[in-house]
Image (cartoon, rainbow, N blue to C red; front, side, top):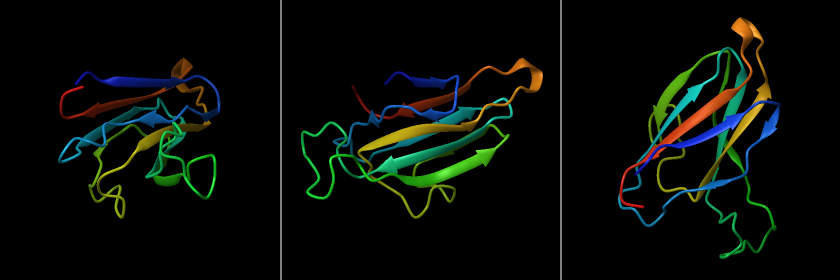
Length: 118
């Protein structure tokens, strides 16, 4: 599968990025290139597309699995970094809390790679 890039240039959250929850086992790798920015990554077990709607809300419930101030990061779903969330998830969302201006930084990027076909 090809890498998925989510780049944010101002504070706020990206749209939900749906993953292939049919892959067994579901393996996801994440890389954050922050250039000193403050960021967070959240996941949900609910379907953000609404095909399988939640009986509780029209929006998925987000669970932050990692956040950082000023550092790049490389981690995988199910690692000690993301526990107690292991596998599987339905979607993830990248949030930029504060954009750094160090070295002329203008963005923060999340790169995701999921094993499998699709």
